Image 1 (tube, rainbow, N blue to C red):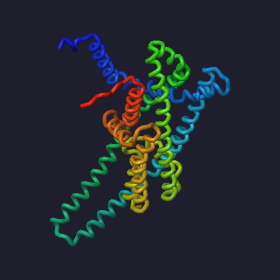
Image 2 (tube, rainbow, N blue to C red; image 1 turned 180 degrees about the vertical axis):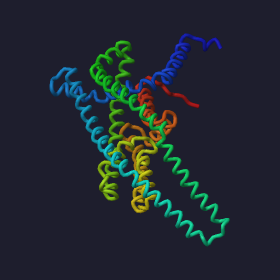
Image 3 (cartoon, rainbow, N blue to C red; image 1 turned 90 degrees about the vertical axis):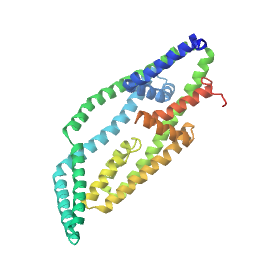
Image 4 (cartoon, rainbow, N blue to C red; image 1 turned 90 degrees about the horizontal axis):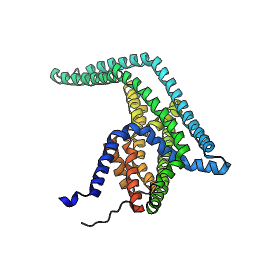
Length: 352
């Protein structure tokens, strides 16, 4: 027992406990800062390229790249949000007509049901009518629960939190872009020569891996965008551009993705009587889901140096443990472990 009570084991235990506490309490509230640091590391090569190409100092190069990235993000968000708000306003104005149409469909369905079942015995008809009534009542309650005051108020209260986090992210991103070389110097100042070489190898490998990760996500998202646009162009050309952009943005949500948009849309058209269009949208949703779940692990694995199976396992376990962020954190943790092992920082060499 006493052989385990050494100074080294005590330090390791304290370090593990502190790491766990940081993971549980500090990281969740520091996500904007963490994302800002990761983003700054990813676009640092572009800053250094600008610095070298135009012979500018670090501050001017970082400011130029920051404005460039901010312009792209703002342009995409502005176009998507304005188009989406316009469609929502248009839908709100037409909502009474839609509700009247649904009421008419419901009454017509009831009358047809009564007509078709009039030849059956009463003990058979009653359960069928009750089942249909329960189904539509459940649908009505589900729709009303989505539009109730508490949920709308909760969503509205989250908007200021999101804006604050986004502003903090932008400010932190700019400051990290400026101070990244100094942060590296501070880090290496506390490392031995051998450890510094290993960390440099890790940083170089992680830079390429993170870039590959982003490239993989971009490739998959572009495939999704192209398939969605072509599909909607054939199904409903009027909304092809706007809805393909909305689905493209929402598709980053793990597991569900484009289904969040296409499933309610298809269900509404099916209830409205447009069965052909509803079926086409359902088929499009299935195609997008298959593309996302089959192409993504393979593309990501080829870009970040992991085989599809570990990539899929890391994505799934990360999603189950950490939710949306775990979908991205899972593969990154596997990459971090693999890189540390290749650099010799972590040694795994045992036999059972």
